[in-house]
View 1 (tube, rainbow, N blue to C red):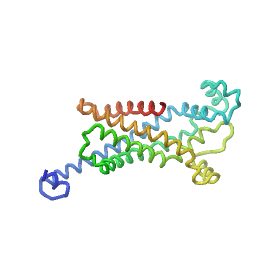
View 2 (tube, one colour):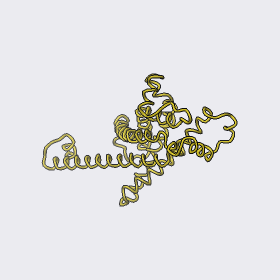
View 3 (cartoon, rainbow, N blue to C red):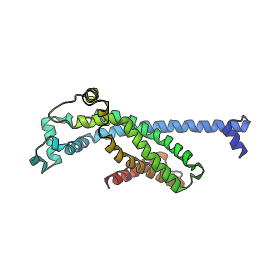
View 4 (tube, one colour):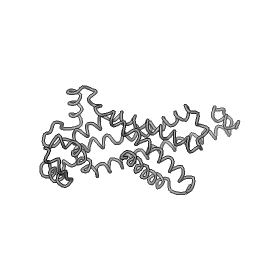
Length: 256
């Protein structure tokens, strides 16, 4: 106990310095690993978003279909029909409208989400006095849920203008009002004011907060259980498996 206290306050005994130095090295390794995982996750997210961009655009067009079609067309919505229309009227590249801004949005969103979660988690442990009860499943679940929800809200708020730009670009059909990311940002700011960049933010946060809260809670719980029962499994495999399951859980919760 005395040795641990000395290491924390920086008393320069030989063993204390070694212990502190070792702990600093571990922290550095943890930060490097986190940064590499963050970069890899951002790149993987950008790649997956590019692959699924046609489906994302079709989803947005169906959501705003009443703005571009008459009542007769709305009675028989068809993915194949809409895909054929895009291909014939706008060309193959039109399936990826707004994808560039999606990629530009992905990395900062992931970065803010990740780092905000870590800071909110530390803050929650400190404020609630649960630092000495980290082994408690219920305490951990509460902290992860609240920290995850706050992190999701923070990340979505910080990067929302890019999300809005993506939607505006992808929703365009025959009439082209926006011609790119910067043009869209300037036009919205000029026509609707700076607050126009945050139209729909409240509705987005209502969905994002619980979704990210569930995602982080499930991910942390599964990873902790997996490591305790199978400590020799590959960390990458564990992260991928837990991340996939947490994504399914958060999507299911959002749909319900």
